[in-house]
Length: 105
Image 1 (cartoon, rainbow, N blue to C red):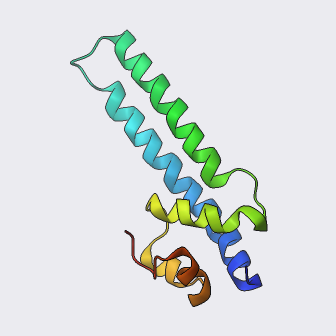
Image 2: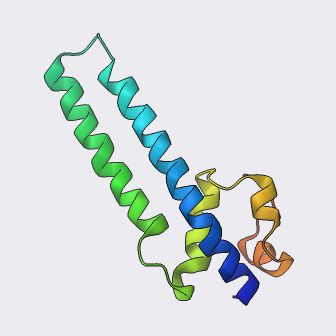
């Protein structure tokens, strides 16, 4: 991984993490507001949601290292946490490796 890509990833990683957490908190709010379920059902749904999302968060963000960065960039991109413009700032080489060419597919 080029030094410029590594620096870009480190700079964008926190922004992507904030976006991820915001998304999870919005999902929790929706689950918690589901009046069609009991309090206990909503609690269990929130618990499962947090458990599942925590595993995903770990794969995408835990262990900041160059050896994990390409995989984490791919996952973060697949989760829609980098804008097209942000992703386009990575080198063409890295975008080609990821096979995404700057589009959110």
